Length: 149
Image 1 (cartoon, one colour):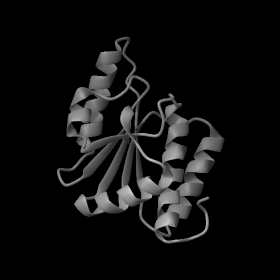
Image 2 (cartoon, one colour):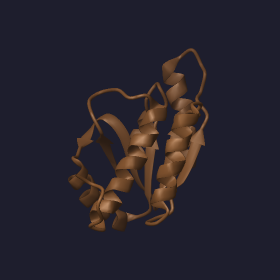
Image 3 (cartoon, one colour):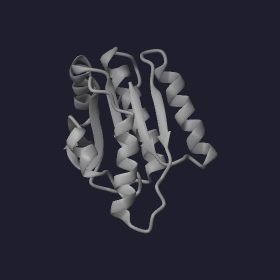
Image 4 (cartoon, rainbow, N blue to C red):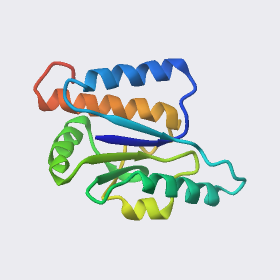
């Protein structure tokens, strides 16, 4: 499983949370986090395009790509766990968290599906923690282990 993220984590407490969930997930699966730099042009569409090219360079043909988008499909945690179990058979899972300007159309077109955790907007750095936590929760649910309530 791979998570591609645009933007650098600056806050130590978020780095610590990310490392904690990666450690917990190592019991179930290998998760690679690829951090790509933000583009810094004045034009948001240029930033999306440049970041999109970097994202696409990390995606292989066989990858099952899930983009995190505000207008994507929403799941509760039980549904998310079941859904991840189903799509894992379709190829290596790859999640994409775009930058502050969103995702390029090229990345959205390459995506196999878009999911949303909420209609709310979250800081991209914090969202990385939320995604890892929900992936971890999904494995705990699938293995019938105590954690999910």
